[in-house]
Amino acid sequence: MDSPRQDLLRLLACKSFRLGEFRLSSGGTSDYYIDCRTTTLDAKGSRLTGEVFSDEIRQRGWKPRAIGGLTLGADPIVVAVSVVSGELHGFLVRKAEKQHGTGQRIEGFREKGARVVIVDDVCTTGASTVQAIEAAREFGFEIAGVMCLVEREEAQGRPSVEKAAAEAPFISVFTASEVRAQHISQMDDTQPVILAVATKCEVCGRPAVTNVPGNRCAAHRA
Image 1 (cartoon, rainbow, N blue to C red):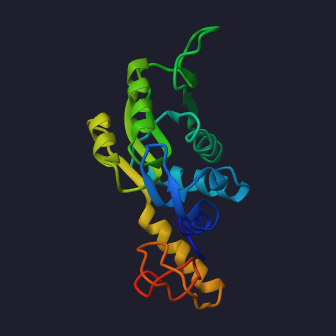
Image 2: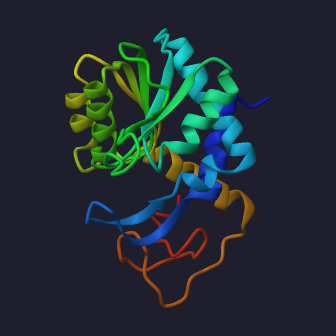
């Protein structure tokens, strides 16, 4: 029987990963895109996300009272972990303080001095994770650890988050390389090889030899 982590990786590779040409929120471009919300908001994906994050937090002995992160990417992760764990409270960090009512930036769990884990879905530059860390500390939380579902391994995201987290460790459940490899493996397993005609590899621009998955040269077929 496969582990929840392996099942979650398969679901991310199937539902959330796309090859192509994309412009990122950071302003850069990429030959792939990961939209984790299509997995974390999926019924099965939500349960798996909750299980994997809860298990990781438990194994690392962080013993937080709550988990939270910057809206919107962290929202489904926070809810999933809170429900699956049955013991971790959740909080959400607004991108800016409300301009009405209580004007608070932290919504949900609000116990000053409590140990918390900051979560995010994708870490590219790390900007949203850093915002959540800073807001949580400013409120009065103690950061026990920081987690993201997928780390893109680029744009200095990890160093930025690690610097902001200070003594608290930062871990990623998966790297983009792992999700990409799983995506390609699943495509190869489910579709026959079809020879490409007069086209170029979508990764490097060299002549393609197959269009499953996507237009690929011999070097990038696997």
